[in-house]
Length: 197
Image (tube, rainbow, N blue to C red; front, side, top):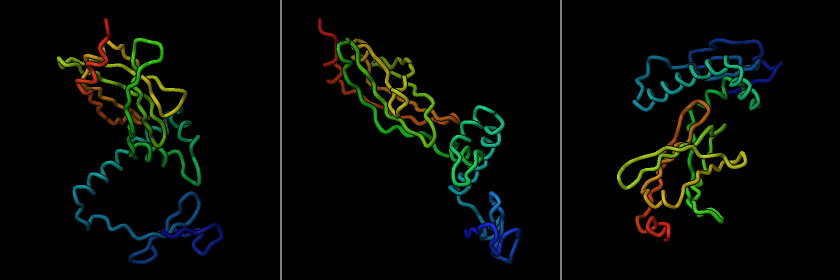
């Protein structure tokens, strides 16, 4: 894709140049690119999925820029000719990533801290945990963000932690997508965490 500056040979032109090339205007600048092939192509399943994802992203972006709070969120991040609409599309297409889950003893207290590191291209809005015990009963809780960083913390009493075999973590982003990651607790490790009487 070739781009031209104001005053270039392509300035003011738009439309099909020949069988292969089309000239478009993007943010007031001319852009030369290949003519879209359209319906002549048989899309693979992955391509169909990507096209549907992009349609959904465009629908989300159109909706998001009509909500003042979301529009302001994306406008704050505009750069190099990339507007709020484009940023909303990019945000929709990329779910958060959970890079680590760790458990450590809280200093001076009879509880443990579940520390989650989760990142997103724009913002992780919340982190939820599902705690599954040895009877397959589950409980949910919400972690707190640590000083506006990528780290989130959830507190568990040592008695409760000793009965848990799996911690399932959900990280959500601004469009509402989420990523799941599980942390499995070794039974011997759980026994070591039993409260001593």
